[in-house]
Length: 520
Image (cartoon, rainbow, N blue to C red; front, top):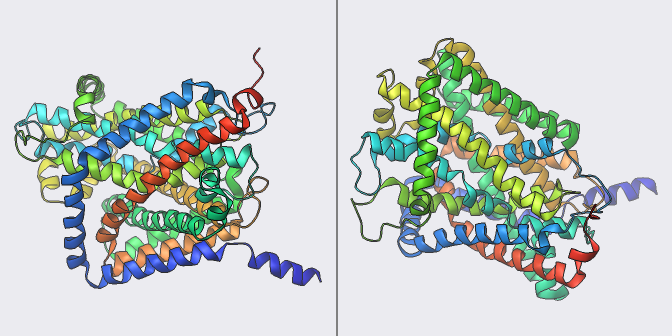
């Protein structure tokens, strides 16, 4: 009898009604993208460029509105609501909490954009600025900081209040978008086909985004590892790096969030801080501090211009930042629900204000510091003539610029080892939190009481890894990246639904009175 019951429980470990359709759709999309990569990329880029032309204003306003809503929820009566029992302490200390959110929010991508994005802008600057000029370079680093600012993290976090509320306050057994929208659409829609469609859309966007992240994240390690070992970059190296990466994740997943993600995230914060300090000491520390100060000042002075820039009058012709900003916000929208579901899961004991402001402020601060150090190092390498960064980027080989810049430093072997280690940990925590979220989302267990199955997380990781490796091997990754950006469109609608849902749920429960901390 117990064996039969155990078998039934194993079968119910995952909700196949939403996981399998999403997986089959991703596979169905990936096959033609792989078989006809060039043709697919051309068609998808045409579609995306059309969206940029028609809706660039919409994406900019979308991000700005979310920032406004974030501050409204934080500083209104809704911000006082505790996600959980007001008498309980938060699950993590503020440093641990911020470290986990930073690891999830930034990942290894900050290491790539921080060191090379300034060059993309410098060779194709906005507002008619002369390419490769001092002003163009200043625009470059400031724009890199802008990409990792309040709009980005507002996009990531603004569905989290609703998800955290249904999980920690209403004690919903499932943490899904459909469940968060129950208060809007009612039981029949949520428990029927409509709810399944919402959940499948979420999973499609996350599975596609995760595969792309693996595909784009691996080169951050392989390029620097090839430089360190003086070997050629090939698929075998990529495969080995990915296997090691997945093994690290598997250990982290087995240890659980307390001993896995939390410890890796906090350790990586210390390691990244040590890395930045070493760069300052053995590299152009004074230049980096001066350039960072200039970049922050330039960013503050031009933040509004960057936030609203569509270049409708074609001043100076089309530049890098018009399409990049729109793609950045569109791609972030694809990841928004993943970030929000994960943030909701780990936010027990935090108020809505604490959750939102921590996600807005902590990753923004760290990303600006990282961009200041890495970008300043890259700019100094270019100005000193040590590395032809702009030529490398202009030849569409921005990833190669990273090991070139790091190798120009004294003790380059140690620097490369530290950089590779930090990148690997970031990639591990990204995959860890991604599979944690997908497993939480698809699990049939009560997520308000238990953690998602470790075995389910490893299965999800295997699916994502195999998909990414196949696409890296046979093609299809670049078009899937564009597809991921396009998938952000329905997610934007879902985001605003969850924002309305959290307000409606709190108003119904009068939670600003009943679920707040006692004032001392």
